[in-house]
Image 1 (cartoon, rainbow, N blue to C red):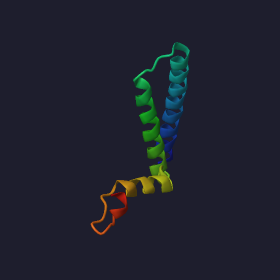
Image 2 (image 1 turned 60 degrees about the vertical axis):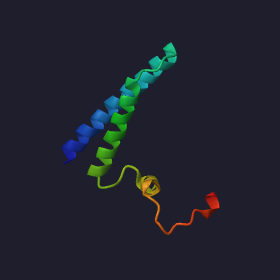
Image 3 (image 1 turned 90 degrees about the vertical axis):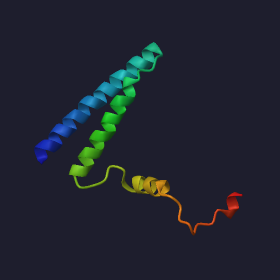
Image 4 (image 1 turned 180 degrees about the vertical axis):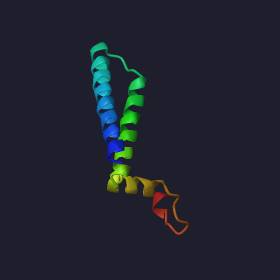
Length: 83
């Protein structure tokens, strides 16, 4: 599994460099490349994969809080203050 982590870390370094170059070009030319968002997603996915293989979550407490915010409200919850 260490070899797999090494590959993921190497890919992460490559993607981070691609992101740095893309951002520099965007700033120099005052344009936005749609592909930059793909690079960002790749970086996030690689970070999550590395964290998963290291036995931890990539999002930590913040991620758990975000997931809790997405759940549907309980029927018992009182929303009278929103009216």
